[in-house]
Amino acid sequence: MSSQRTFEYWKEQAASLSINGQAFINGQSVDAKSGETFETISPIDGRVLANVASCDEADVNEAVKLARAAFDSGVWSQKAPAERKQVLLKFADLIEANQEELALLETLDMGKPISDALSADIGGTLRAVRWTAEAVDKVYDEIAPTSENEIGMITREPVGVVAAIVPWNFPMIMASWKFSPALAMGNSVILKPSEKSPLTAIKLGQLAKEAGIPDGVFNILPGFGHTAGKALALHMDVDTLVFTGSTNVAKQLMIYAGQSNMKRIWSEAGGKSPHVVFADAPDLDLAADAAAAAICFNQGEVCTAGSRLLVEDSIYDEFMEKVRQSLGKWKAGNPLDPETNVGAIVDEDQLNRVLSFIEKGKEEGANLTVGGNRVELAEGGYFLEPTIFEDAQPHMSIVKEEIFGPVLSVIRFKTDEEALQLCNDSIYGLASGVWTNNLTRAHRFAKGIKAGMVWINEYDQGDMTAPFGGYKQSGNGRDKSLHAFEKYSEVKATWIKI
Ligand code: NAD
Image 1 (tube, rainbow, N blue to C red):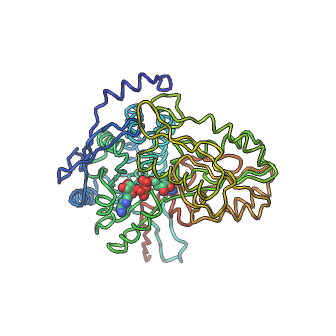
Image 2 (tube, helix red, strand yellow):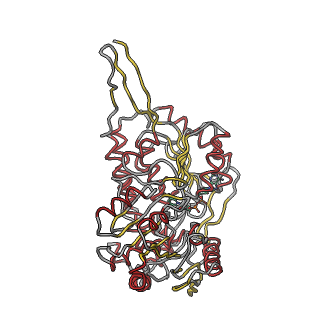
Image 3 (cartoon, helix red, strand yellow):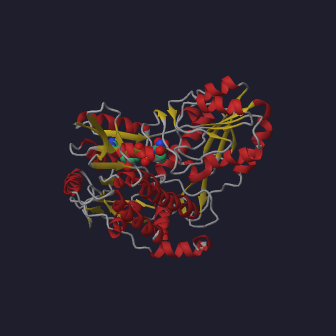
């Protein structure tokens, strides 16, 4: 049904949408204690969508106290996994029933195309909640191989109060990768969405209550990083802090943990992922389409964006012609139009940041072959042409730094050794892709690339069944799959003498 909606339909829905900007604490929609709010502005046309509660330390203290009380009461933490599963499945059903409103909020708040919000963001969130709910009553504890007169039980227990701080690029999905396993394990959760995209998180809090998640177990605290985020990270009674966002903030959170209660910090941070195309790629057209999608999807605001394209010298001209053509199919437009595949950049700051990298790329001598300009639409907003820099060099800032926009840096290589060295020449290690028909080469790269994810002859695939996360300064721990449960539980050894 949703796929048949028109541009007109979405504009009408947007105009009539009533948006709640309150925090959600202990099962209630509340203002920040200070009464402060901040405006959340749509990058599509610059209009104010809502005044959102600006939570700070006082709200964090209240939410943590109530989350702890809920945890200690056992109302959720001591439910059987099968019971928590039923509630989470109902939560997923409610997300599905409200998918149009949630997708619209996501598009209005951070600018992504409505068709992606429905398919990728709603689809990914539903899959995260449902898969995790279905998994949690199939996770067994262990018995240690002890001597005959002893039993050693190895059990997992929920950690207690989990704070989740998430970014704006996939607000619902990033949140659901955290709160699904955290709640499934029995923890109480405090979710702080990005100040740039708080609206869907607020709605999710309300739906969670409707599904039967008890008061105090799932709380939403909109606010800024330096107020609400910092207070959560320094709080003495938050047991675990899970984070997705930039590497700089991830490092800061580790300092806060050291300054407070040594809370566990798990972070999914930045990336500058290499995408390698060899002359023996099975299909150069497919590889070119993948290279374009890897930098254009979600306006390039993707931690796993294939932002460093490494192309074998012998096919460089032929292949780059295909990439330029494929990139031409990605065009910035109003994201409420279901035909649009490149939406708005999240805000003016981010637009200016990306434009400043484009200037740097020119100054450093890379060859700007496609795009490079702001796109002016009648509605205003922050739009950008997908951009390609060719003949980039490893030392350039457009190759080294995460731009987080639709800007592709292309480097030529001649040998396997050179390509592998280029892949690993980064402080990051999140994702990577390699196109080759040579099995040995594919395995050599899969083993040799220092990254949490390697795609062979495809790019940016994934599912809840496999872990997601990075090496090096791309973070620690893993979201998704059964591995995610490790972040939300403590392991206990109990010895019994017989
Ligand atoms: P960001 O680090 O600026 O902000 C992320 C969150 O941290 C926000 O909620 C923000 O309010 C909060 N924050 C900021 N300063 C804080 C502080 N001092 N204390 C506590 N919280 C603070 O990142 P962003 O701009 O929202 O998102 C883009 C970044 O996220 C990129 O680097 C991208 O690669 C990364 N990201 C990584 C993954 C992954 O899984 N590895 C996924 C998506 C995005």
